[in-house]
Length: 326
Ligand code: ASP
Image 1 (tube, rainbow, N blue to C red):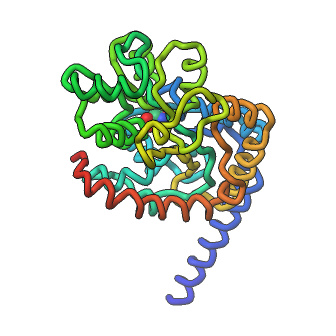
Image 2 (cartoon, rainbow, N blue to C red):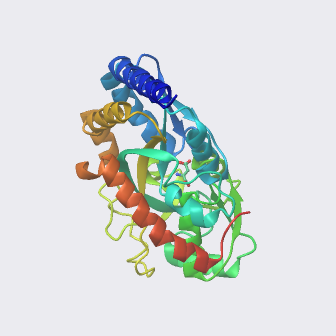
């Protein structure tokens, strides 16, 4: 009996490993979905579409961008956590992956247990913007206006845990005020409303905002890095305008469902690395004042270590601020 059991376990293992080998040899033999947790047209979507084409070329299969929106990116993360771990679903998300555990009381996924790591992707600064006809013309006037008109001013974001939300919170805390916040399914649609004048303020990534700032379609009050950006040399930092230490640079990572075969992760990682040195991608990122992650971080271990550190960093900050969703 024991012998029989041992035999079936061994046969099972052999079948599994030869299936794994077959998978490794043929993978990928159909398109791969790259899930984006925010609406089309926004900054995360811009990055995803920028790298999807060269990644697809390296993999020999189309990488299809799919937007699964809502709840600051957590709906998409949950979908990916439950997806078949076969290498045909991958996921790009920003630092919201690290803030979600502290922000959401009932999170239906675990960023540290439910995913395989592929690598870090890009680091993107943010800008503080207003609609074009907003009454304040510079940061000093903005401060005065916001203080005097707290109940009239609205600020858009992409939901609890989105970086637009975190940046907005940092701004409001620095101003010692609370504004009416309006959540969207991504800063793509939030920006449409800013351009249309339906909402007053938005803090958003340069991957979406640089062209709009250059065309003067929005008002800009500052950048969220400690140094000015090459693409926007005339825009002062918030730090130099009195918000000492105000710094947000948005890191992004690429993930797959837990259990995705190591051979598939290796192939996707290799394609990601190729995409991130593609001259079209690097030039476009440069024009948007964004940086490719250092190559030693474009690795499963690089992303894992960073995510763990970021969860530890944000948890106490968020808990202290007392912000969370049920
Ligand atoms: N990056 C945006 C945010 O987290 C969302 C988006 O990419 O649309 O605020």
